[in-house]
Image (cartoon, rainbow, N blue to C red; front, side, top):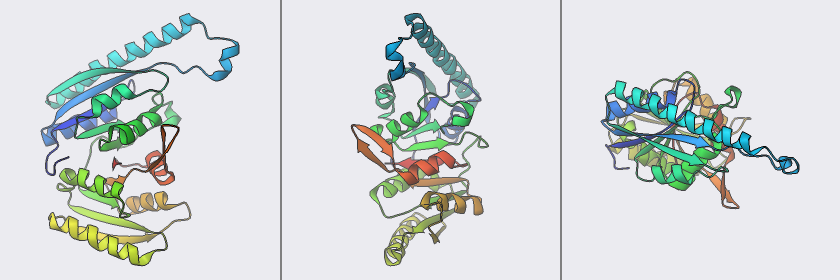
Amino acid sequence: MAEGAIKDITVIVDNGGDRRPARLAAELARVTGAHLTGIALAVDPIVPVYTVAAPIPTDFIVAAHEQSVADAKAALAAFDAIASAAGVTREGRFAESITGDFSGVVRNALLTDLAVVGQDDPDAGGEPLRGALIEALLFQSGVPTLLVPARGVTELRTQKAIVAWNGSAQAARAVRAAMPLLARAESVLVVIVDEGAAPAGVEQGAEIGAYLARHDLKVEVRTVANAHEGAGQAILNLAAEEDATWLVMGAYGHSRIRQFLLGGVTRHVLGRAAIPILMAH
């Protein structure tokens, strides 16, 4: 993403609920002057392996598919109303996922500056395969992705940013992707979780601090202890203590049998964050 400009935003439109990600994306598009694309997703039901001995009736599968398509079309109508109210240029797209394949979503997200998607929310039933969809956006499309919490957040307030920094290429990509929004921040707190390598942490902190300062950002660099709950929780604890409004961090994962599995820190933060997170792989 070119620094200083977000001109194209793509949002995954929830098939139900208050469609919080679409509302946040529409407001962000309004503020940045970006074009907004909404993708509504019809997810085919996944038949458990144990049903092979007693196949599910075809009528049931057809009805479930038709309902999924109807829900996606209703989501597109809701998206159009949300984007229209925000006064942004927009377009709606329809995609299908069969047996957990999100290649259609990935293709639609390849040429965008920022993808916006809602947090997986198992307690509320959630969207089908939301975790796998987030992984596809991060690892297969390569687009910077803004994760919207399931509760509490209705807009992206950029005032107080936290940057989780470990000197990795992923963290650097996330910072570069976030620069157009970091430029709107009143303060930026860089957090380095102490993993027992203090000299490296000091060096990393000096480099990222100087980089952000050269972009005229008000920056503080802080090293925190690795909490008993792990590095991810240490980051979230600091974000809560500092009343941060959003978080920037790299996304990490491991490829297994052509599937990307989120690393422990990434999965922990994605699952528990109460503020928006901008991530990049």
